[in-house]
Image (tube, rainbow, N blue to C red):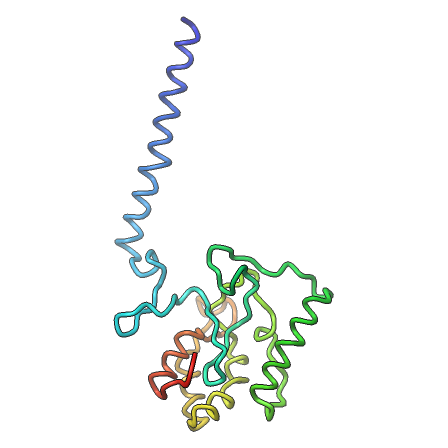
Length: 197
């Protein structure tokens, strides 16, 4: 009899908390997010001509020399895998990281042999999340001449697009100015159709 009197409140509390934390709270938070921040709550998807082309929050691979290239991704089994967000966890002295960086520098140099500027670090190293959709302004400027040449555009036109898509520091003082690669490449495609992607 005494065990029943102890078991009933425990089961009641378990069921009540399961309903509150497992059903009511998630439904309430989802509903509030859908009302107050619908775009963000649905993944900040970028839609062009009725087709979803990506997310403003997750990078994607661009390898055509006529596009700006994003930051490398260390997620597996494919780059920018949002279900497996992770960095490479390699130390700066790791031989595998050094080899990967050398290979990325070689690919950048091969795509634009006349560019002798120093390669910005964010073009050859992955971020902690592996999902960054942004590159630094320096990384965009580094690629501008290549993109202009491949597309047959005036360099000033490409530089103006980079300027238009440069986002300032968060709250005016946090972080560095950055460029969303997908947004920039979509604007570039609108200005001059790409060859491949």
